Image 1 (cartoon, rainbow, N blue to C red):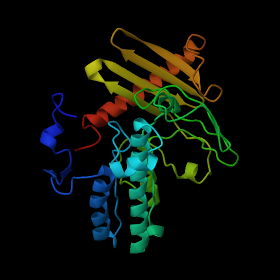
Image 2 (cartoon, rainbow, N blue to C red; image 1 turned 120 degrees about the horizontal axis):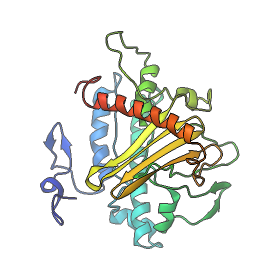
Image 3 (cartoon, rainbow, N blue to C red; image 1 turned 90 degrees about the vertical axis):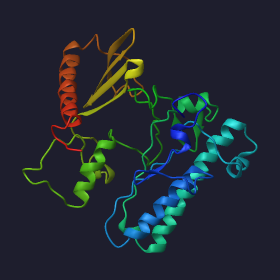
Image 4 (cartoon, rainbow, N blue to C red; image 1 turned 60 degrees about the horizontal axis):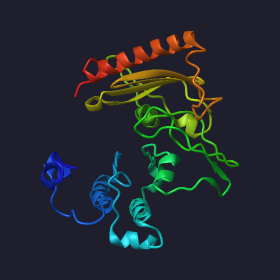
Length: 295
């Protein structure tokens, strides 16, 4: 991915360490290359509290697996070989990390959290990686949208004893970690925090997220500006793009697949949620511009 078609990004040095381009140990699977940097950091900090944020590229586009992983899926076509191979390579490195934590005797003191962008089943079906139907008691129905839209775009899985409740977002990590380490801001340090503590949901003490959830997708180069607000059972979705846009309202408790637009039927609710959305967005902009946080 470069500034010009056919040219590597930044002269072929996509990884940086302490602000400097990395050129050593850069051949092979990228999940292994990344984990090669993570493990020394953990070994160095094993005697004290630490935070390790590991960003795997896999299986994001371009999806290209190494030959040793592709051959594990030789019975499939090229697309599946690369996709499954990338996931297998990443899974191998996650296992390597877990083994290292056990070896160091600190596994029981760690909180593991896995986060992924929303790849909807519809996308996987289009790539030939998922077939409609049922698998091992789990009913999979394709929801609308994907990681580049404000539609829910995720699998809704229902199986005996396995249910997930409440919408969450990455903003919940900060208040969750703050709560786990029993930290509190002084009165002078207090600032707006958009997320909520996720531990009550994880422990099943609560089945619904408190407060509103605001999120969006913006790509100015294409004049795409999408944003959404989930408040209680309702979701307001506003999408603007070159040439037009639209506002939609869904009752995601009754209509989780976002098929029935209620905007025309509930104009007062649309107005109420739109005002909430504007207030949250203004707060986000103040934080972005340094009014609440300094960089």
